[in-house]
Image (cartoon, rainbow, N blue to C red; front, side, top):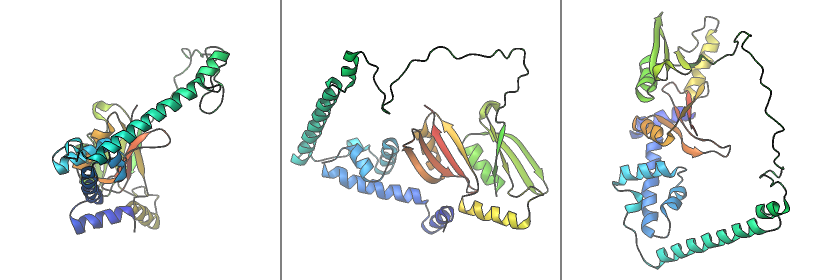
Length: 278
């Protein structure tokens, strides 16, 4: 069973998306852990499976009515022991960091020897020999290209508009109908940025009936198409998507390759991944 089909069937059976149900169970478990008193809010956040402290705190306050930091917690020996252990771990870490700085192979040792400090890959940093050459293009035709538009399929034009215009906040730049089908162009407000053309699947006359059925099957599975968006505030954007009952694929996560992002599916099953601009 595909993830998209499971999500739709789950909503029909239980009246809420899988992500909402999962977060409710996570918050219930978090309340029990916090009342034990031996874990911090951050530790509880990761213990229940959340990867974003901001998202966890927002959901906790919405469901419980008070922030996680203000939930009544015991002040007994277990809590005091936890604070003591945390202090010891910090002191040990500080001491290790000082020894690393001052040791023969540390950064301070390298400075004393007058050598360039290696970066984390072990490769010595070298200053560039000089500024890169710049070619004068004033007398040449400007042939630089930009990405003007991308294409995503839709199977319900009204649902597509509700998602991209009303939920994501894009403006509608064009809406063309022909033969009972609609091509809808949306993009960031103000006419800037790359546009997205939402088009009927398999509308190209060169697509065969068998290919059209394959496209529809892949859309139902959520494996046919996708798009990467960006926002300066990922947590607030994700909260807005959850409030709008978007189908959540991944909550805000710090990826090992250096970006923070989340993922949802649009009404047609297309994967919409959103990165935080840094």
